[in-house]
Structure formats: C-alpha cells, structure tokens
Image 1: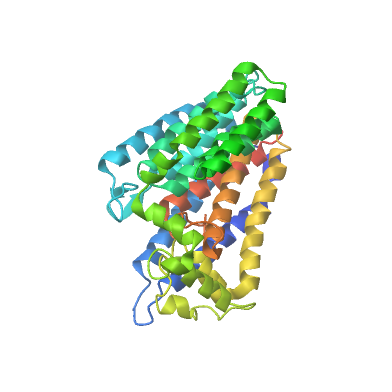
Image 2: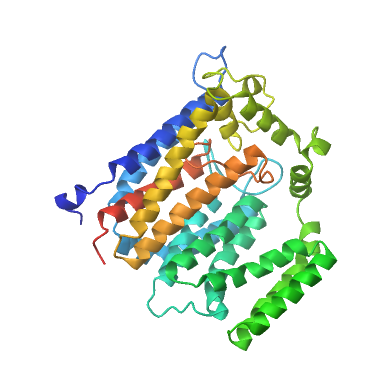
Length: 408
C-alpha cells in the first residue's frame, strides 16, 4: 500500500507530458475530421474524448497496483493475449478482409495492443529471475519463443508492422537484463540473412563472413551451429515469406523503394504525406488550415498519418515540441529504470519505454518516407481506442513503479 511519503515522489512532469500529448492528439483528430458544416463534433472525436477520459481513469487506477501484483499477473496476461489473438483470427473484423479487431458495438478492441504489453511483462518476469542465464545464444531461445508466438499470430491477421514491433522489443530488454552486445549481434544475424538473401552473391558472401567470425569466436560449438543454421534457414525462407505476404504489403515495400513509380497507387500516401509536411514550413499554416488535409488529399490522416497533419498545421516548431514530449517521456523512463531496486520493475519500464520509442520512431519515419508504410499509429496521439487505452494504462504502471522505486 502506498503511503503519503511515497506520493511526494510522484512524477508530475511525466504525467503532464503524457496528458499534453493526449490533448494534442484530440486536437489533431478534431482537425483531421473537421467539417465546417457539421453542427456537432464528429463521432470520431467524441469517441476519442470518451476513450481518453476512460484511459485517464484507468491510468490513475493502475498507479495503485503493486509491482508484485503485476509480476504475478504476467503469465495470466500473456496467456489471455494469446487466446485473444487466436480468437480474433476466427471471429475478428477488419477494413479489407483482415482480422484485427473485435467488434464491440460502438467500440472496437485490437488484441495486439494488449499483447504488446503482455509480452513485455512476460519477458520481464522471465529475465528478472536470478537463475536465468543469458551468456550463450542457446539461452536466448526461450525469450525468443515468448516473442515469436504472438508475432506469428499477429502476422496472420495480417499486421506486419505490429508483428515486427514485437521482435524489436527483445534486444533492448535482453541488453538491460545483462546480455552481452556480441550475443545480441549474433541474434540479429538471421534477420540480416533474410534481407541479403534476395541477392545470391551478397547472401553467399554474408554466410562466408559469418562462418569465419563464428569459427574464430570463443563460444560453444552448439551455439555456433545454432547461429549459422538459423541464418541459413531464414535466408532460404526469405523468397517464400516474400511470396506469401499480402499483395498490399509487397506493394508498400516496392512503393517505399520507388514512390514515384507507384504515385497513383500505393505510393500516393507517402507522396501526399511529404507534401503536407513540407508545406508546413517552420510555423505551419495554422490550426484547421491544412490544405492537404482539408481537401482529403492525405489518406488515413487521423490515424497512421496524424503526424503529417500536425506538421502541416503547426510546422517544424510544432513537430519539435511534440517530439520533445515523446523524448522527455522515454528519457524519464530509462532514468527511472536505472534507479528502481526491483529488477522486474526495471525491465518492465525499459520495455514500455522501448515500445513508445520504437512505435513513435516508426510512425514518424513512415510519414517522412524513411520506412515503408506499416499501418502503425502514433502512440497517445493517433485516433484509436485500443492503443490509447492500453498506452495510458502502461503510463500508469510506470508512474506506480516510480512511486515504489525503493522497494525490492
């Protein structure tokens, strides 16, 4: 139970920054869906306001939950997330035939959002054990399995962007748990092999270099075999996986590589996003004044491309302010993770900070043309009930663990 002395350490700045992003997000959703002839707020804005209110109450309630309770519930939440991910493949709904949401009448729930944090809790619980060894590649197989199960299920929805986010959460949490950087580098080898395998010459040279490095490295022979074999297998699977991607997913990658060639199809979003961001200049065109948005040139402007609306209307300075708020939250969380005494709490905070940083970076990178279009929202800012609710709850967990930083 929290006492009055602990509440003196409440991180007000963290809370204010979180709520500031939510407020900016509601304003941007309002702008992206603004209709001057409408007599009331659009249903999307009303829904976002309602979810934000519920999310803030949920965040306040989660602050009171002890880290021992969170740790105890980690396997339950992970199991529940897996069940929901299987169920959504059977009875879920989507925009174009995919199955990503449960239809709950006025609201939709996306189980992959819950699964993201369930994976963080499950990983943190496993890595926090004193008996857990992380000094050999073979010791990384179980943490990898914890991540790969939901990754495979989300990939079946299909949702390539979110499934990749699950995998990206693993390296920072392993590093924080004490895994040596060289082992993390070996963990990345199968991924690199998958990418270079599209060119046979590059792939053979890569395998030759990897084999040489493994031969001279001082690790167990079984670990060398695991790293090399998985790299060969993933490389060989690369063309197969590419051919089994959905058509729109392949087109998104091709449009990223050559947007002008696909300017009237899958490259249209990216081109319009760049126009919107560039036209905002330093100070922006002003609230509700974005022409790309007003004339509906920019698709998905209230979800995946909300940052483009922000850039067009508030310019470089507005973007800098919002990105500064995200950076403030991430830095604050990593600093907190270094001060908490409870190992599980530290790993959870690192996982949540990594998720916020990675998702924000990918979303903004997509709008700037740095990454292929993934369909990933901007946390706390984009329209989306599931994402907003779960992210606010995760911020409440961080605040609660910060109040208990001196507890083991």
